[in-house]
Length: 153
Image (cartoon, rainbow, N blue to C red):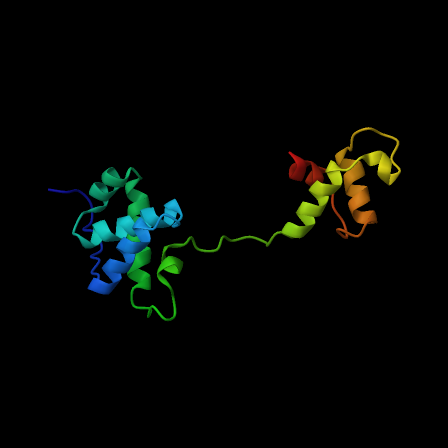
């Protein structure tokens, strides 16, 4: 006899099952998405959370979480929410990043330049100098030397 509450029942139609199998086996599918697809397939086969966790090698709580997420999203039509979107992480809370990927790349490129070419009498950039030069060049409106240091770490 198993301990704890009975796991949420997952029922899949043939088309959904086939799409999950295809997604799981596709070489270009990110591993975390393929693993979640496998979880849902095993859940629909009647396995409990502990069995799935042992078979896949993940915590039972993670299986319970994804089983619940799948059950929440199952009523939503596929036209509104794709299969991969159902298996993706939810957006994380918190403020969005302050710097774009382009700004980050420009700051890193700046740090790779010779500081003497920009008029600095040193052989290597310090985070303080990179921050000042990034502001001077208009890459960013403001940035702290500490943030530059984190980017270059």
